[in-house]
Length: 148
Image: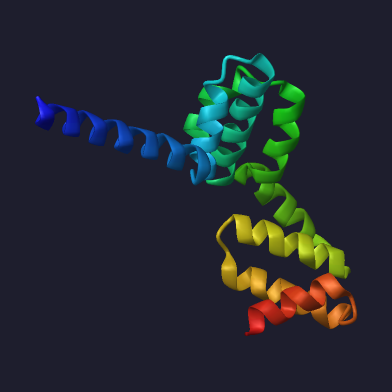
C-alpha cells in the first residue's frame, strides 16, 4: 500500500512538472497548437493563424492549406505574396530585370533570395546594397553580420 502511494505521488509530480514545462518553455509550434485548442474563439483563431504562418514560413504548404479555409482570406493573401515560392520567383525576376537598382531593391532581392534558399546570392545582394549606401545603419549591420 505504501509502495503504491509513493508511485502515485511520483506520477502526479511528473505529470505536473510536464504540464508546467509545457506551458512555460514550449516552442512556438506548441504554443500555437495550445492556442488553437483553446475554447475561446478569438484565441483559437489567433493560434490557427499563427500556426498557418509558421507552416508557410517553413514552406509546408500542404499542411498550411488544411488550415487556410478557416482563416480570413485578406490575412492569408498578403502573407502568401510574401512567402509563396511562385510569387517570390515573379518578384525576383522583376527585380533582376530592373536596369538601375537602389539599395532597397538589393535588400528586397536579398530577402527573397534568402527565403528561396539562395544564400550566396543573398549575401552578394547585401554587399551590393552596402556599396550603394554604406552609411545606412540597417544595411551596415547586415553587411557586418555576413562578413564576420
